[in-house]
Image (cartoon, rainbow, N blue to C red; front, side, top):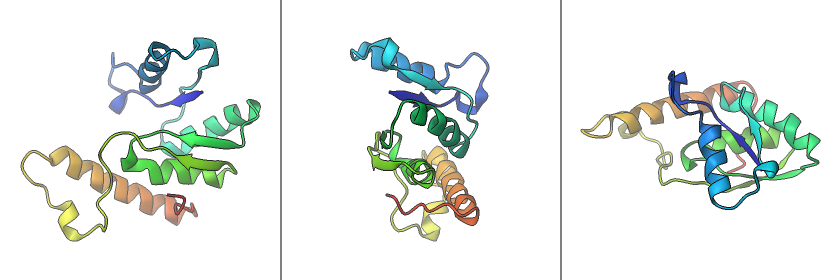
Length: 138
């Protein structure tokens, strides 16, 4: 198993996401020797690049991508572009609105974080597509 991620916003003292995920896997009975960590990627794309090297060294060609459904399209798309057969396994309950309309960007009381993340994710998808990523995996 391979886990990726960093501390949200690189907050000093915050546990990196990969550390939290690795501890959860161990708590669920996964032998710590079977857990690999990619701690260096600063974006979904960089995490996929670093993860691809680790996955290839492990002999992997098919991967299940477990991430929040909200940005599964980018995570799975990056690994697919790097040559892996990808099986999306979204976790969490949030996802991009379907379809995305102008109302998706109008903040409402109590959902400022969701609005911010929807704008960020939409912008990130646009940037990835402009760079040639095929995000139609999911």
